[in-house]
Image (cartoon, rainbow, N blue to C red):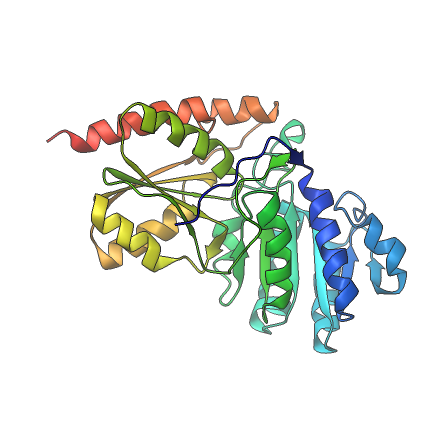
Length: 319
C-alpha cells in the first residue's frame, strides 16, 4: 500500500515537467525536444538554453511535428513533443496513429493543459477525449501523473520506456501527494477498505483524495486506488479490490465514455466480480469558466464527489 505524503507546497506542473526533461537530457544525449510555437509554455525554457542544438521549433504545425518526431526516432533519438493536449492528440491523430503507433516509434508525446484546465478558452482547448482516442492506437502507453512527484518520476520512466508514450499533464499548481517513484502500469493502493472501490487517475486524484477523507469520516469504508498510468491498467490491483468490495466507482476528468471508466468496465465485464459506476464529465461540449467552477459544475470537486459517491453507495446497497 502506497501512503500519501502530505505537503502544503504546490508546484507549476508545466515548469516541473520541463525541468524534469532537461535533467534527464543532461545524462542522455538522445533526448531532443520538439515545439510547435509553445516551448516556453511547456516548460522548455531551460532546455533551450542548455541544449539549443537539440531543440526543434517547427511553428504551429502539429502534424508535421509528429512526423518529425517519428523521423528523429528512426535515427536513435528520443523525441519529446509537448503542446496543448487536444493539439497533440486530436489535431494530429492520423500522424500519431500511423507515424508513431503503427511504426512503433520511440516517441514521447505530452499533452499539457489536459482535461478542463484551459478553462477560460473553452471547448476548443479542452481535452476530454484524449484517453479514449489514444488508447485506440495499439501499443501506446498512456500516463496521467497525479501530482508533482509523479510528473518528475513519470518523465524519467517515460523516457526510459522503449516505445510510444502519451502523457497528460494539467495546469495550475499541484501538491505533493506521493513519494517520488513511478512504475509504468502500477497503481497506488492508497487506502484499504471493504465497502466500495474508488479508482481515480491523473489530476482528478487531488479532489478525489479530499472526498475520500470526508467519506471515511462519514463512515463509508473506501478502498482507494490511485493511478498514474491509464494504459496499461494495473488489472491485478483493480480486480483484487473489485472482487473484495463488489462495487467499483471510477473518477476522472474525461468524458464519461472511453476513458478510465470504460477501461475498468471492460475489465470487469470480462473478468466479473463487481458492478461499476462512472463519475466523469457528461458527453457534451464544456464551455468557458474558471477551472474550479467547471469542476463543481460537472460534479468533480471534493464536495460534489462526496455527495455523488454517497448516493451511489446507498443505491447499490438497496435491494
